[in-house]
Image (cartoon, rainbow, N blue to C red; front, side, top):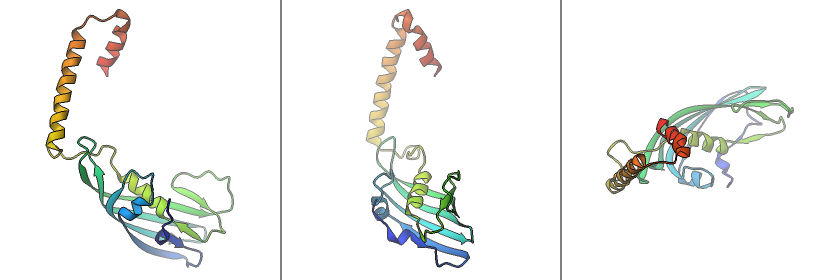
Length: 179
């Protein structure tokens, strides 16, 4: 991962209070994270930081579009996203405290925090599980091929259904039908 210095917040000299940051996320940001499923997009991330004596509360507001690939036709797809996330950092030197995904320990000797790993994680969480074009918007050629393949597969299944099957496999066939 390439270090992205513009996403590092030096909090050690900050007074207690609220601070706001805004980041424009694009291809250059996603290129810095080779493990990210998302490679392009135009996203604005607003970060609101509330600093107290014992912790820092970060509220992330993500809005924009992600350039993804349709799971059905593999053509480009622009996916609008809009979500909010929260991350809490508690100042402590104790390492044995169990905290959840939303709360993390931060050593009291640390003086800055890099938000880029959190931003890329939150943006990846915005990506829908299934990315497809709206009905009728997929590539016509790919849709035609898929329909043709599904017809051939249906015919093969139909032939298989009418075949005489070894009784030992009958239980598996029943399981397949029920699913």
